[in-house]
Amino acid sequence: MGLDKKEYFYITTPIYYINDEPHIGHFYCTTAADILARYHRLIGDEVFFVTGTDENSLKTLQAAEKFGMAPKEFTDKMASKWKKTWEELNISFDYFVRTTSEEHKKSVEKLLMRCYNANDIYKKEYEGFYCVGCEKFLLDDEIVDGKCPIHKTKPEWIKEENYFFRLSKYSEKILELLQKEDFALPEARRNEMIEFVKKGLKDISISRAKINWGIPVPFDNSQVVYVWFDALINYITALEFYKDKSEKFDKFWENAIHLVGKDIFRFHTIMWPAMLFSANIKPPKQVFGHGFFTINGEKISKSLGNVINPVELAKKYGIDPLRYYIMREIPFGKDSDFSISRLEERYKNDLANDLGNLINRSINMLIKYNNSKIPKPDENLLKTSEHIFVKNIGENLIFEIDKSYKNFEFSQILEKIMEFTKSINKYIDKTKPWQLKKENKIETLNTVLYNIFSAIKMISLFIYPFMPQTAQKIYNQIGEKNEVSKQNYQQAIKFGSLSFDRIVGEPEILFPPLN
Ligand code: MSP
Image (cartoon, rainbow, N blue to C red; front, side):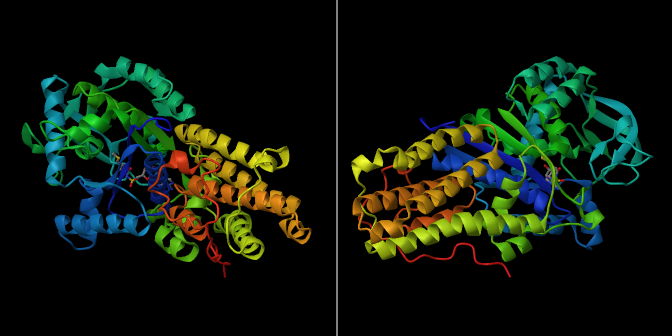
């Protein structure tokens, strides 16, 4: 990844089932991907960010039926709803992939034919318990009291002739891949996968008979492709894999990073790379399996009636504070309860008090003590220990934050930014610009004010990927003419890049009091 050189960066979210509307759990993963995409664009990388919808599922058929709609009509309506929701929530995706598209169908056919020609597909009679909620055959230890423990429903007994994929053939290659330190993260989940593979991989059924929805198997139209085999291929459909030659695929595929929830980590770290090996394609660069938001310890789901709608929350608290809360509250790999009171605490303490107040009081001081103009600091004073810490901490943070991005440490990045913010508030309390003004210590006052605004400029660049609208508002208030997202980050973030004599605007309330 490129602080020092431009690189290609391909980031994906899972494609979402469309029987339902987006909830806070979906927003969580999509936001994390958006943050990575924005950060990489900011540092100058060429980014391709993809999200989309998983439409060839049995759940789609059932939901369409429930609403009395034809499946095609239903999928068009729901896919456009998901797309619109992400747009409304300021998600900066570059491409929206749909599995009912012609392009995707061609991709699936192409990949499946490659597996077939590699002699990795064969026909076999199969029977087992199938959970429509999970869209998979459950293994014995995945059934508790006769039910799927996730969906709390009885799986269906299915007996039919299916096509099978020789997953077992790839056991060793998959194990080797998982043993590479940074392919599957976080480590605890990677170790679970290693244990799973060591027990031996079984071939898997990859088609369904008697179902009239989905992509027909290209060499046997009486069956449709199993929805997971189909869905995983979306990641290369988006790169135009279906074409004979795709520049996008060549540029981005080897840099692919998939963000997925822990429940679908196995599909992405075992089944997906095996499909790719079979088709003679490299596996993705990385898969990260994040944790879950729960409500009172329970999974969020429509059937449990505890869905939290991100659009409603964003209306009340703002998109950026909501992004801040979900990314700050839990380390990315871990689970946590979603709590409105914690969201409000974070809003008041971190955002309104620490960040909002820093900007507000600083601009007010500048208006009062230097006619709204950024002053020229005293070069010698700037180098003294009392003042130089701003430059030192700020410039160090650039590298620390970059490293944390590579490790998906979103919460830690925000913690570091907020520590920096607090340290600037403390610096103001300690240096007391109001007293410096009274005592006419103009050199020191100018140095302090310059330092404060340099820090604010850095903070706005640091928080941009997490809170893009807020970052832009701060930028405008401190008189920066550029768009945060469209400039040379490496230059703009350097201490000293803040020019003198520019006029700052009136302070604007960034985080209004909650009522
Ligand atoms: N369609 C499949 C993914 C196919 S990707 C090739 C699917 N869809 S889903 O809509 O059920 O889930 C999409 C993602 O949302 C998953 O990564 C899942 O882990 C995530 N989440 C669903 N509920 C969640 C929470 N409560 N918290 C965090 N993420 C959650 O699976």
